[in-house]
Image (cartoon, rainbow, N blue to C red; front, side, top):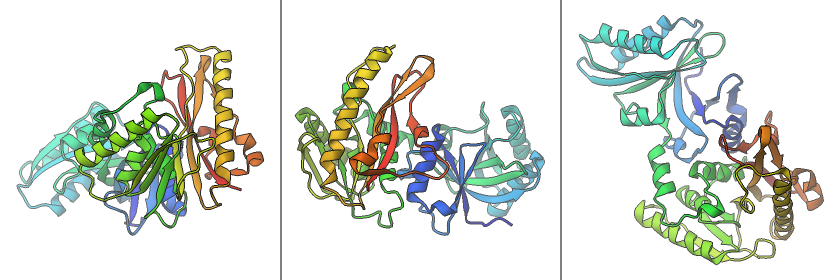
Length: 397
C-alpha cells in the first residue's frame, strides 16, 4: 500500500530547474523524481495549502489516492466512479476532468472515458465532463472550470512503468496572478531584460537551499533592475534590500513596490531599502541571502557572431568577478548566493556559458550542487532566444 501522504508535483518545461527548486525548500530525502516524466513525488505529513503560490517551477500539486498494478484504463474508470459516489450526495453538481502523464492513450480515448463515466452516473449526479484536445488539462482550463474546488475534480493518471498512479489535483499555479504582476507593473524596461516572476521565485527559492529558517529573512538583490525579484520576495513575506547602478532603475523599483502594496493589497508589512550603487564597490546593509539576476550584457543582434558573444561574455565575466570579490568580505559562510547569469544560444543551438564556475575557488567560493543535476543543466532559455539564463548557487568557501 502506498502512503496516503504522498503528492505529485507536475513540473514546468525546465525540469532540472524545477527539481532544484524543490530540493532547496523541501526535504530532499522525501523527494523522488520520475526519470521519464516532468514529475516529482513528495512524501509529507504537513503540506502547506498554498505551497503552489511560492513555487515558480511547479504547475500542479496533486494528492496520490491510489496505485493500481495495471495500465488498464478501465481500472481508473472504476476508481473515478467510486470516488464520486463515495464523496457526494446524489444530484450534486460536479465538474470533472482527466489528465494523463506518460500513459499510452490519446486525448480521444481520455474524452471517451470521461463521457462514459458521465453517462453511467447521469441518473445519480449532475456531471459535467471537461474535455481537452491534449493528454493533460492546462492551468487555464482547470482554473476556469474550478476543478480544484471541493465538489470538482481533476483526476491525474500517471504511468510509473508498472501501472497507474491515480491522484486528485489540490493546487494549481495561479497564472492570472503571474500575468498581473508581470504586465500590470507600471515601470518596465525591455532593455534591461524582462525577468518572468516565475523565474524570480525560483531564484529566491534556490537561495533558501536547505535553510531551516525560511522566515524573518532579508533578501538582497544587488542588480535589482525594475524590482521583479524584490516584488516576489516581498510577496513571500521577506524584507528586501535592492541596489542598482542606474538611479532610474532604483526609482522604477521603488514605484513598482509601492504599486504592489496598493494594487495587490499585500497584507504582511515588510521593510524595503532601495539604494543606488555599483555592485563592484558598494557596501550593503545587513542581509541573510542573495537572489539576483545580474546584468545580461549589451544588446546583441538576432543572429550574433561568435566574436560578438565573446565580447559580451568577457564584459560579464569581469563584472561578476568584481562583484564577488566585493561581496566576499561582507558575508559569512551561511549566506547563500543564487544568481541568474547570461547564457547565449548561437548557431546550431550551441550554448556559450560565462566561465565563472571554474574560477570560483580562486575567488573564495564553492558551487552548491544538487544530486543528479548537472550545473550546466540549470538553464532557462525559450525557443528562439539568443540570451537565456544559467542559474548558479554559491556559498563562501
